[in-house]
Image (cartoon, rainbow, N blue to C red):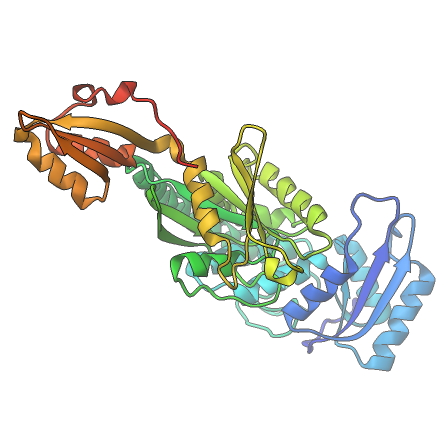
Length: 437
């Protein structure tokens, strides 16, 4: 007889197995952070070492008995594995230890279910949960729409085995259609930004690297910030004025994590397209984290998966306030272009350097030249002053004005169109542009 799952609390036994020869090794410390972020109470952390997983129970017979005894001794409500379990392994372990079992993917999904705030975010989480649970339907689950509490049971819940499989597929199809609609709306907004030539800069990075703190500091926004994994789930976009650049769109995105479940990447495709469609990525890194190089590699892996690896990137080494005697700085490559900025999003130290680096990297759209206007073109002169684009001006003996201008090309073109003038009139197409260091 199959073990009947019961609704339970959050007192958990944690299981982490190290596979020394595997490239899919998980981090035990990060696992503890995930569990804390999910709101679970850790009763015991069980560790082990294996060469390969056991086909039936993932762990060996001895370790399985240890887990079973720990569940009894600590009156645990569930057992959390820091690994991706096959549905059959999960069911076999549950039947053997008579306790609810959740793997790493299920744990991350539960955290996402807690964090989702917008309608889109909730749809994306529900889709990922349903696709994950569709292979784990067993006797004893309640109706799809019934809300349940406890780690791994938040969100849409599960269905009765046979009769609800059709309902499950129908719900997944409905969510896909809704998310397709959201994706079309996002594409329309993105096309509108492209038509206005407004650059988009997206914050990416490992979860809890400080992206939202930096976003809030730069934009005076109030995105939720907490010292926990996946504090931000829903994307947020704000306009940011950058010196010598004008307005850009800054996007805060969900944090990445090692071995981010593919189902989550698929479910959050519309959200991640804000990253794929950006003109510049700011890769935010917790420079005080001893695992930062490995975390950076994980971010690169996700960027590759979502097709964003070729977008220009600027590394932002955040949290220098946690280092000893470290000052804000810009690091450059051999060509003199910025590749890394050291700053503190909490104190704001180094954020001016970040804005300067953004200006340099997006500066191909900056026009810096000198133009001469006739007396009849005073309207254009006034408009340039309104946009704070004039650095200096002088007049000749016949009343013509010479203006030293610095502004975005798109804004200058809009002004020319407004006054029925062409770029050739000023020789703008032949002007040599430059960056101010």
